[in-house]
Length: 262
Image (cartoon, rainbow, N blue to C red; front, side, top):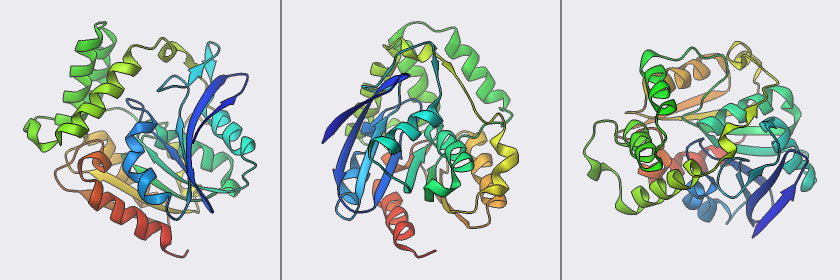
């Protein structure tokens, strides 16, 4: 069931399916909630799954010039009167999940982070060069191609990615690069979560793609080393979005971790 939640900052569109214990899904910064289709269909059999379009992505809208994503998550929890959730988050969504967990540890039961970003990380030259090139590119088609090649293909044969998955990723990229909201200023409550990772006491599963950008493999390893109750899995021959490239294996790790008692 699709619902719209309104706040002063944004119009937040979510997809809610299932019942019982709640799992919040936060997408990667290049995509939207549709990246979680497999997870929603699987997990909604045993959980209440809420997939969020973060404002500025998908169907959600930023209403001003500034956005605080931690407050957006707070708004979603308040709307559904939730006191505690499990979180599955990817990339930029992982950064938000980490910040939210550090600020509201009592509201997070456990987390699954796929290719997570983290504030305070010093980007590699590869990532800096990519971001500079992206900032100089204005054509939507060129932006889509650049992002797909950087985050997904990464020098591999294009047939590594299922045609339907490629189509879905391209659709999400095209949509997001056609929006104006991406220019809003992001307000960070925590400037450097990297230094505070050791404060995370929740059980944590980190999933990385073997062929991902080196930064994200290093971040995954760093989080695993600093969070006491963490485990890490690296998915062979996948890049930044391993859950889309090898859904069966990733979903097996996810379901096993969710069912494991703390």
